[in-house]
Length: 81
Length: 350
Image 1 (cartoon, rainbow over the protein chains, first blue to last red):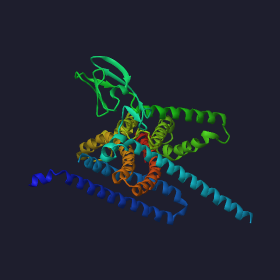
Image 2: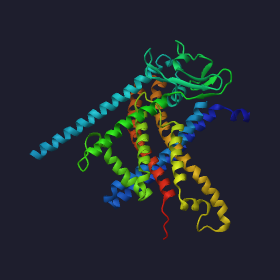
Image 3: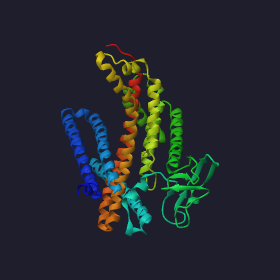
Image 4: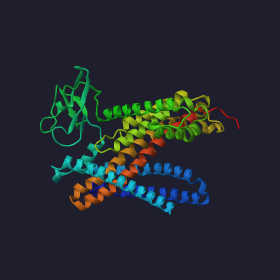
């Protein structure tokens, strides 16, 4: 009973959905923190806005890729189903 | 009064520019969607989004633009078999009139990708696939663009840049002053051509991949792996005494901890190219998958409303993808410069 439940493919697909959501939450927190501190930095030092924006974008891209890792893995799981 | 008219003119100009660019983007997107529709219009009843998406993201021996007799470009297959030797033929031989896979000359195509011999002989596949052709096209465009940039640089020496040169010279100067020089140091000139080539190759590849119907070249793990291996070899061949010293005899570490640190450092040599490879591969491939999934929604629901909404979202994602194309090229170049800079840094004693 339990074994057949574990082998049920629909659970894997549900897990993929939950996983993609969790990855998005993580990336959201990360990018939100970057955005918040970048805004603070720009407010304190408006003349450094250009440099802060550039650095912000690059770090946001790095975090985004971490979220995409999760997304791709979850997609692969759901494609198997 | 004059000032107000000028401002009004400016406003009109900006709004005109905005409207034209928006229209172009919408047109591009509808193009994409309609190509997709033609692709799978007939089998709308059994539309399988996962298969379609994987098929569009992977490499292929044919380049499919639209249905019909002239819609497909059959690319050449170059196979070297241990029994039959070198064989060159068109991939159209693998398909019959109804686009089903058939055998040809003892070879068969598996999953539309790998060539296998029916007598179990090993086959070396050197075919010009979709990605290889894209690579050649991108290289050709780069040669055209950068010879003209170099010519312009020679001709307009001491004067303001002109034409194509005016587009690329600021980017090159930015990369030199903001990315490569701070990371490598004063001896950056030896690595400057390599890093510039890297940046523009990735950038052109990424942008080319965003054109509807084009292939996913920089989203192929083999391509990104080779790019990362270039950086890997340059880093380790040009690595100086300080670099290897930090790996095998880390300074300032207690003796009992040294074996552990050395193992971690050695692993670190190999994780750098792996992270470069996977970052670019995933960022580009996931972007394509997200766009194709959103377009697939139209065909899953089969409604015009969803089609309109998903087209709008795809438009938005496309804009983000252009940004991602730039950022990924920048990040790859920056990390390559950083690794090379760390390996070739002159020994400093503080």
